Length: 549
Image 1 (cartoon, one colour):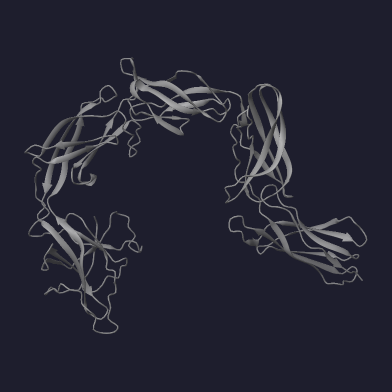
Image 2 (image 1 turned 30 degrees about the vertical axis):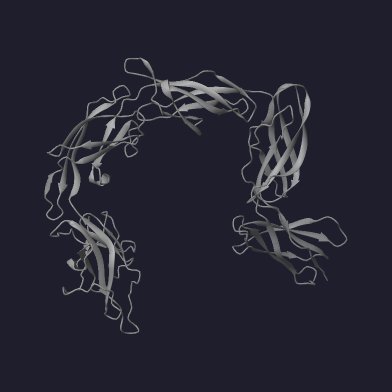
């Protein structure tokens, strides 16, 4: 750990054990809640949240249960856990003591003292406890006995552990100590002998997960640490595992059930060992239906899972890849019983003229006789949990299996939200799935300002057309200037019913536009924004009548 040394002005003298009370009205604790204090095995770390540390900062250590300090620390360094720290960044504000060299091991209360704003002594007592004890360390660690695979999962672990004395950094063997050996699937205790040495067999479960700290997919991470310390005091090793080929064999390639329901499917997952013998995967091996609905292999590699009947679409049963097994798949095809439903996400379009069209394909299975089925087109507004039926349509269904397109067009745009077709089912024909669309929306537009001037105007003179186009932000709901849009200018002569396009103007950053034309005759002027292909609705301005003299 690299530290930047601080210059701290202080004196060593008698230290009081109470919080000083300011005598002047302006005197106060500049850090009334005190610093954040934590300890390591041989240091104290303080963080005031700022580089501006208090004057005469001291850390006082006293044996717990006593009031007399046994050590006073007055020099600190900024904590730096890396080599690329920018010292101008405000977040590097923690300071630490140097490694402490106390006379005796034990538990010490940590007090923090500094000067208040009036020069008085401020004392925060019992901010932390320093457990100053022998530090357990794993010094060597080896795993031998490979090659490792599902049929050879037992290895030999050898290690040496020591106890470091923080008073002088001397080390002695951890005699008859306790270590913990860990993988992602198991944990076991290892004991050292009188010389701090340990040698013991260890058997992997065969369900350990991949070590994501390496690029190899078939590495298993093994950690050996002291029983009462975390992994930073231990050592880590990666064990390479041989990956066998695997197979998922289903008891049946098809399943039967109503569309949109779950039915049981069973099978067996196996691997091939180095001798070409097929064997069951380990109990607990992770599997899933289409990598979504997870379950585990049982004894003899057998499994039974609830799988979806989703039309006739082929589905996969996956055996997930681990350091011990290659990924593989088994496939089944649903054969739905009498039922009807939708399996494709609805196709929804919203025109620039605020009209909605929704279409999808209605799948019917094992229908006993030709009939007509009623289908609901439903809408759920953004932020709502309620589906509202917008229209009900009839869909003829032939006997047996059939599919038919269902479409509803020219519905008024109800706002942003999702759509779905739903067959509610009948007594004889159960309802199948009803997938919903993605959120469909367009941004509203408005021409709040429009003017043709001057009024009246002389024939042949210039007529200035000005206005402003706004769009409604879909996320904030606020109206904002719509820049970079094209606005068309239209004119309708007095006594006529037909509008004629006169020209086009572009909007600026503030949404405004302008166009100059020649005045020819009396009539109405109007600006029109025609929308775009996907994101904005059309809008028309008010009509402005101009009298031409």
